[in-house]
Structure formats: structure tokens, C-alpha cells
Length: 252
Ligand SMILES: NC(=O)c1ccc[n+]([C@@H]2O[C@H](COP(=O)([O-])OP(=O)(O)OC[C@H]3O[C@@H](n4cnc5c(N)ncnc54)[C@H](O)[C@@H]3O)[C@@H](O)[C@H]2O)c1
Image 1: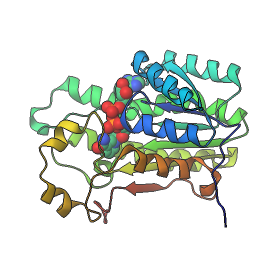
Image 2: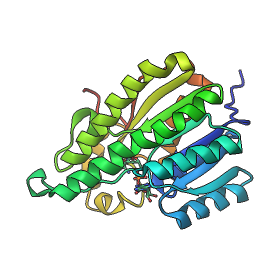
Image 3: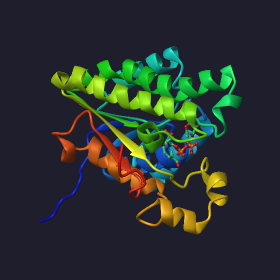
């Protein structure tokens, strides 16, 4: 048996694709043949990722997009409409801060929920009509195991990521009849520029104890799960949360 995932002819937009997991998702979707829009508020990073994908023979364009900005998202939707539609949206942009909730100020609460939760809803709302008009497609939201089971010192982030899970389930029920599937990947600790400092403080034995598979994740581990949710391999899957975390959260 020979199985391959062919996304040629599909157009995919990945938010937060200028770095880490978003970049990994964009590279994997492009390797499967999709034409990928690298959307990030850091325009330079988005351009760098797009040109690396093109150098590898893939199709990619960079787009400056602040996921919290309604007007930015509307402009992105208009641009996709004109460029040939959209079939896959991966909501990956997020921010987080580690520290006790009791020391969190209002600005941190607002920006944490703003980027991580609102920044998932706003691009989805703006781009959903384009996906429906393109004949349907898939939305893959990146949550976190923190949103499934709660993580101490990441209270705002856990709340925002739990919101992403609720959004996924509710939207899946609403848009299934429009030919749109909505699913969620919940990564465990994954090696990216944002997690590097945290990872450096962790001892190898702690990682082995916490992760049944004995290691933390790499962006490619998450990207493979996104590829499954984005493709017809998961054609009868919607409203689901898949933990990709080396077994970190086996309950909850
Ligand atoms: N790294 C981990 O251990 C881990 C674990 C679980 C879940 N996640 C989730 O995976 C996703 C990616 O994480 P990462 O570690 O790759 O992060 P990262 O910091 O490497 O990349 C995040 C990207 O999002 C962009 N971004 C931030 N705010 C934005 C905004 N307002 N508009 C547009 N783009 C914006 C940044 O410019 C950056 O390029 C996030 O949703 C994160 O919560 C990460």
C-alpha cells in the first residue's frame, strides 16, 4: 500500500508562521504541495520563511498580519479571495508568560487572552466566508496541553488555550454543514525559540519522568498532526482535540 498526502491545488494560511511550530506547519503543508501564506506580525520573519520554502521548491508568500486586528484580518480575507480562495487555516500565533497568577497585571491578562484566544477567533471569523466560498476546507487551531489540564504558573495561557478548545468544538458544530471541519492540536512542550530558555532549566531526568516517550517535541511532531487534520486523511473528524505531547497528559 502506498499512501501519500497531496495538497496540491490547496491554499493554506498559517498564523504565527514566522517562527517555531507555525513555521514547521507551513513547511510541512508546503512539502505536501499546498500553496502557503506565511502570516505573522513580524513581516521580516514571514518573508524569510516564505523564501526558504520557495528555495526548497514549495509555494509560499509572506503576509504581515496581526491576529488581534480585525481590519488586518479583513484585508487578509480580501487578499485570499482575490488570490484564489482558501482551503486550510492554521491558527498558531500565541504569546505566553510564565509566573504566579497573583503577580499578573491587567495588561498581561488582556494581552495573553488577546493574542492567544481573540487572535484565534478574529482570523477565523474573517477567513471563514472565504473557506466556505472556496468549496469548504479545514481550520486547525493550535491549543496546548495547558488548555486541557491546566498548568501552574501559566494560568492566563491555560485559560486562553481552554477557550481555543471550546471555540473549536462550537465552531465545528456550526460549520460542518458548510463543508468546513474544525479541529485542534494540543502540543506538549516543544523545542522552539520561545521555549528554549525554559527548556534549558529542565533536567534530562525530569523530562524523562514527565514524558512517557522520553523527550520533548520538535515542531515537525506538531506539523505532522496538523497535516493529518488539514488533509482528507481526517475527512470524518471534526470538533476534536488531539494531544501531541509524547504522552504528557494521558488524562483530562
Ligand atoms: N513551544 C511549546 O512548547 C508549545 C507548547 C504548547 C503549545 N504551543 C503553541 O504552539 C504555538 C506556537 O508556539 P511557538 O513555541 O512556535 O511560538 P514562537 O514564539 O516560536 O512563534 C510564535 C509566532 O507568533 C507570532 N505572533 C505573536 N503575536 C502575534 C500576533 N498578534 N499576530 C501575528 N503573529 C503573532 C510571533 O511573531 C511568532 O512568529 C502557539 O500557539 C503556542 O501556544 C507551543
